[in-house]
Length: 326
Image 1 (cartoon, one colour):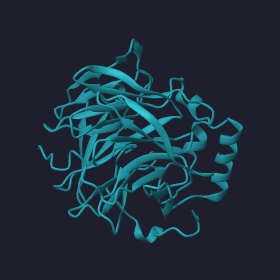
Image 2 (cartoon, rainbow, N blue to C red):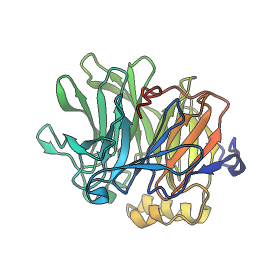
Image 3 (cartoon, helix red, strand yellow):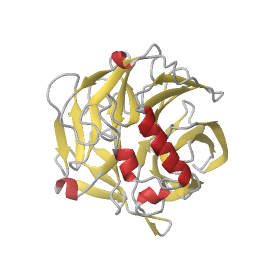
């Protein structure tokens, strides 16, 4: 992958919205809604114009720190809570917050990263690391992340020993689950067994210096679009694991310092939070939207706006694409 040959330039990127707080995870629907996790304790709804609307939990930022979010058919949200208390919660649009999962296999959930609802109604949850504070998991040799499945049999851990588990996606035939391991710097996949167990793990591709894979989304050609925090890279990964750099926005000197800290085992929050005024503010997720599913919207850790660019390939419609409850 040639970093000097990104397919798009920053001139191809537009910013929309304002006043969002850590819009880490994005969801798009067919009617033009863009939902984003928001650290005011809820979910914001933006459009391509006008102010956003905040669905805030009673108790606000003290109640929950939303990271991954999933839209349910009735209009409520499942939220992965990145607070040390962890867990998965349901947020109704009137602000009511209720527990969905606080404990699994007898273990209290630590800071919880991501939640995905698949086309069978099963819920997949990721926990990046068991370490607290979670920055202790920003190491190439830490592999204590795991994946939880909630289905008719109840919640259980179905994969363990992952290198900072982040976003997951399921292929169009519901046969394989793909997962970004951020600080192991790889994209892996499992076969989904008859009862939801994850087996036969294989590494699809590994990422080089400066790439820390976070967000994950499928397009209609079965390629995966990966976002990297810090380096602000968007990488399209083919089914054979080959990589194409779509976009990049980084300060080479800062990235070199982050890489040195990562290799030395001293990477910490200040390294990740110290990005200087880039157009892209540590992009963390990608969601395809727009009327034709050819607009890629980018969530981020450090910005208050949502970046987007047009693509030549259609994104795969997510399960919630036609959920448009008011």
